[in-house]
Length: 309
Image 1 (cartoon, helix red, strand yellow):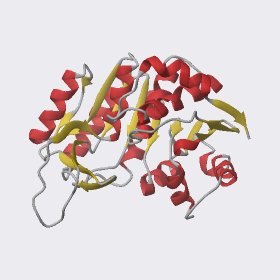
Image 2: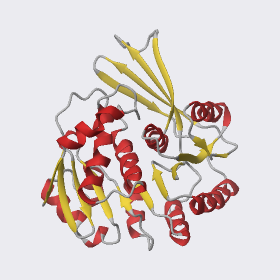
Image 3: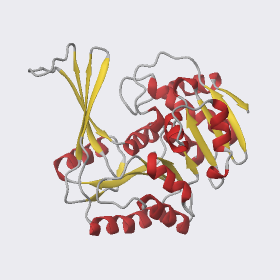
Image 4: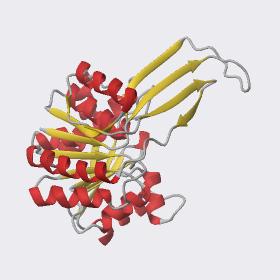
């Protein structure tokens, strides 16, 4: 069983308008609402791959109820913990070839809730074969909360795939119990290194530096250019097939889903890299976030090129 963790989920609302106008009324006919948050995108893709998956994190209020109903509809096991605060909305307005986002910060987690979830997480980690942890922390949780979770997972012997950024990423790397896999994108790695931009050689040097020494797999996604992957002491350049990207949002989450599923199926080496990164490509080819066409997996893996650098 793979468990996905989303501590700051949302209901993602997408409005599509032909001509967005400021300071007046905009009527919207095309509206979609989905259970959002990086870990929930991961869970959706794992479920489409027909791998046993459960989703956990913190949910509250009527929006939390909406997400619970979505999980039931998608046949994803729901192990979220209830909180007093309200789960957030995240709104995306698609207009004039642009996307304007309005993101709520989410609930403030109480100390008793924070401690309660660590107990829940311990119980989940004992049941899980693999755990994915994705996204930001809601207000009220301490900055070292992911480090506490990593320590628990290490204690019970369950490997963690971590996808976060900024200070949370830096703290995880400083942990005495680093994750099994990390997936920063190119911009997130540049930010970690204190640089505006980085090239392939910079990425190779970074992932093979002592900074990532304790991390078995490091996957640095490069968008349409593929990825640089570090496994143990070797680095690889993975090039993806050229596609017509419809909606790349959630492709990083889909990569996490692909690697988690591949690891659960005991894939390794080049085959695991191709399988994991294929899910990001397939997500970008779909209009809905966190969805893939499984009939294209073999085609996409065959188009992937892996070379040691």
